[in-house]
Length: 344
Image 1 (tube, helix red, strand yellow):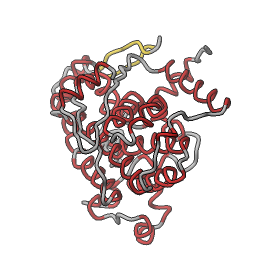
Image 2: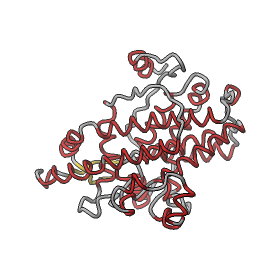
Image 3: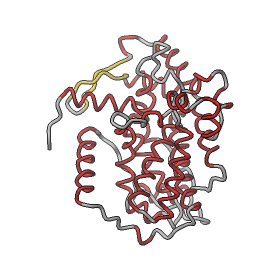
Image 4: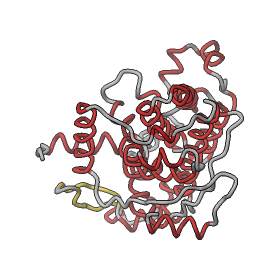
């Protein structure tokens, strides 16, 4: 396996951490969303769960290489004025008419892009294009996860305007890495969304409502914490990295009172809902003959390299298996948890 240079490795780590949720949480969220699907969809997604999991971070990798990608991950709602998250046009053409496309793209388009991505996934289902279904489903999971992150709804996305620089990766990467093994991921069965576009906006609104707590509690704890104990040095893949100490992280996580867990749960359920809705809108195509997806040698090599690179970076990611939540026959929490941990 090739060796990473120190500079390049640090660059990749910083890019991933500054992006959204961190690859740890994005992969876990996408993976667990598979287990919300009905029996007609579950076998196809379960058979390709590794693809859905590993490719959950593709949009973040494209942020720095593809023009127009970065704007799909956030919405700086506060630049439009007070209560803008409630007042902005919900539909793209109306928003363009009011603000211009250049303005919208400058400050983020995540809720509008989620709906576009859902439409593209619906078309892939209609065409029974297995590769595109997987690619678009993985991407859609990523954007939905982003929409549920409070710091993706503000111009102060990394605390740079309030002297809290670094809070972005702290909230969405450090806390999930430390505490998400103890979260309750039983979110129920995927449901059809009558107004998917408005559901995307509901996610942004909910995340934005949580923003005040994200910033305020970090500031309060910092003011009452020994400055010399706020940060620590940890080994990450052979590199000494400065990060928030476990004691400071614990105090912040406690003050947030389950906020990170709630946003992860919302992401998981919402992803399942969008995948299911796209499938229903496509006419509920039979996916049973698509399970064994055939990739070209070039595609397999590209995926192998990507997986190898991620494996080089990620550390102690605990993978979960689970069970289908059968449509019209919701399983009990006990049965779900039992199957998930036994890998059935």
